[in-house]
Image 1 (cartoon, one colour):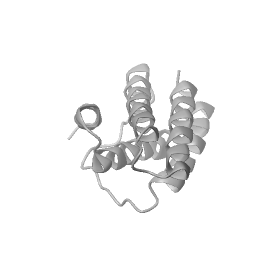
Image 2 (cartoon, helix red, strand yellow):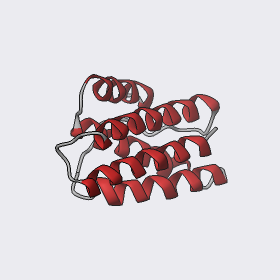
Image 3 (cartoon, one colour):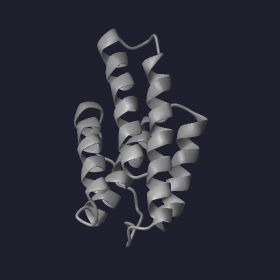
Length: 125
């Protein structure tokens, strides 16, 4: 599956409902882009720092594999797809931050994650 197609599928799943597997899939897709494109521009380094912190805090227990090719070049379209993924995931975490079923610490982690994901998206702008 192409990267952009996989990204669209994951975003659709996140928009519909609170899907933890789709959220972990978005993190995996973003990591694959970062691994492939890191070193081409410092923006990817800033992106990766934010992404890795969110992954360690919120997705340490998630082991998801998305069957998609990593993007092959750092261009405006690739950055737009990855930044849009991060914005969609940030909205997901904002919704989780208002979930009264979780304790306060977990809700605050979701809120912090949403802010970091927005910084990651902004790094690619």
